[in-house]
Length: 86
Image (cartoon, rainbow, N blue to C red; front, side, top):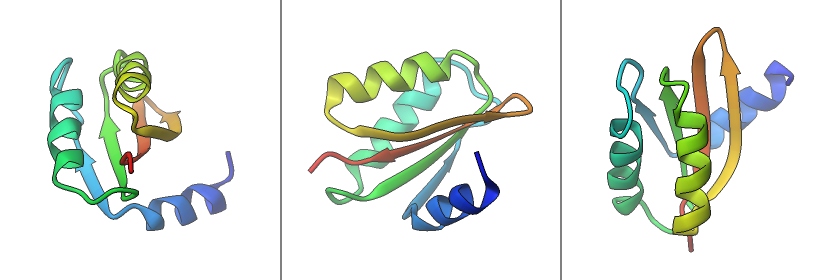
């Protein structure tokens, strides 16, 4: 992962949701609420520290129709970029 590509992707996110320090199911519930408030095709960046969030967001997106554009981990912090379903 290059910092250039993540920086340009991060700039594209319309909304940032910081769920660091929260454990399951709170990151998913907060992301669901945020996505419901966004327009179709919008990008949501979610930050989390719960290692279970990787599996949770993959499942959530697969079953809700939202698109998981990116999932990264650095020093125990996870970042997810989700495109709201159209």
